[in-house]
Length: 193
Image 1 (spheres, rainbow, N blue to C red):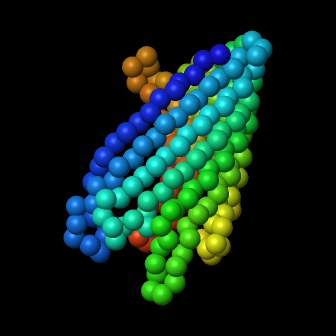
Image 2 (spheres, one colour; image 1 turned 90 degrees about the vertical axis):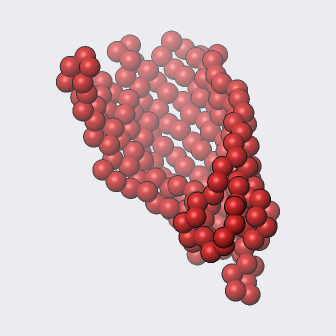
């Protein structure tokens, strides 16, 4: 058994992008986590993880962006004798915003649940080329404000070619759902090559 147990704490200045107030909005973030891997067979690994995030704004008019998120992760991987890996990964994240968002005369509850199912690959070709990828399906469901729901394919892939011992070339492609604690969005679909 191996793993990490820890806590990250930071205070940072919020972005002035899409901000309609002139205030020094400091965000306090607490993030305890636990990640473990259990090797129950020479080639098989079981992964479990827990992550909790508390994010709090010090400006009252931005208190609707305060959130608490709890994430649970479980996965199983097969690692071949040549160190290639294939596996599945499940992630569930529940986000609660204790203060309702006020939009004109409407109160919006941004509570959501995000579920992701991924296939994981880490494959070495010809000793100098490696493909690391995960591809899956993500569903983000808002409990009360369903117009913001998302369901679709997400993932990322990196192909790396080691030209020499000191030089490598990588090509990355991704499509991810990114949490956006912002006035204009609940999440962002980030994609690129």
